[in-house]
Image (spheres, one colour):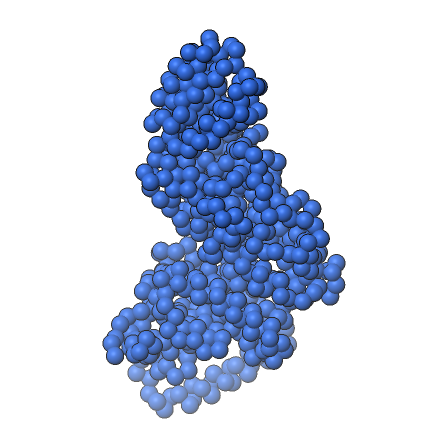
Length: 557
């Protein structure tokens, strides 16, 4: 056995026995799904589960900050899921956290630290978090979290009172609901003789009776604000599900690997080559969660484990910014559709999303009429050290100043992984804090393609541009050689083929008065590609000028 100091996390489900008694199979299925969520967050926060029993989970963390952050993520994620169920069938955790000296034996942890965490969990509100004073002192200045001091609490089998704090949980509108403050115990006056306690208790009881009668007759009531659900879109830790065997991200041997890392999609611009053929979405077909567009990987997983197996009446709604709402166990199909749309739109409105929610599925049948949004062929991101350069908002092509200001405010300080997709006509979408590059790219490309009507392109990942962004000439649009009216028709296909084969470095296209092209391919820098394209064009035509650099059409600055 060895001793150590650890942050101990204890959680269990409020009213679990009642839920099992009402519907054992459905409760056990949802418990497995919810446990997957808690286990994923605990692992992501560096924690280790050392004991489980039924609906209870005990875990240790090396850091109190990570333990509290994990608890908040769990409660917000599960609260969002619970909104799909009637109040009587919602499954909510209570969580308690303390820092203590514990004994480790065969992987299990024992000691007062474990016992106190379990007692703090009992003090927590349904869907809430209760922490000890030691945890509060560690976390107060490190996380943007509000606390309610509930004072010293007498808890079972712990000889001394435990000073505890409740974590204020965030509502959907971004405000915080302060928990109901439990009455703290009062410390006994120092040196008070034992004989005084019976008299003191008698006085207190008489006073309580008098006050109780007064409150009864004056009907004085107190209440606490109940925390509302949080619309979470962050999140996702599950891998991207792709119907294509082609790689999503194509690394270059000379390029550094793309970083990966949870934020709301916000409105971004790139035309690409001919649209791919993703799995179709056809109204009337059976719901397949792995190809639902716009939403996070985690949402897809939740829908597969909770929505699909649930009985009717149920419905699922989404919008292109990735906000969702679903409702199950409703009294009728119309009630399910209304509830799903209302929940989705409430989340979108609270986050400032300008997009309207639409029904995607009723029961397990797709009713969405728009099909799959157009996206470019895989891979969606090509890492090439020759063309990558540090990201600067002023250099993002085709955007208006208002869009640049939005990127500077929201994208630049955002957490990794973050990407920007752009399309012709000034469409742009970006997100931040997504777990994987694959998911970040997919969601932005799907949203951008849905609005633009053509495939868009990922132009930036985190702190770098991943496409060649011209600086010698001004970007005016996206270049597609096969459709270029300035290249002589007989040479368009050849130009398109050569550009498609030139997958690394800088490419440029120049034409003369007769429309005969000159190409600069796989150059080490922009100027080198431009010079080669002009030189090749001059050999075949006159009055040559550059019409494209990388994926963009260009003109004079």
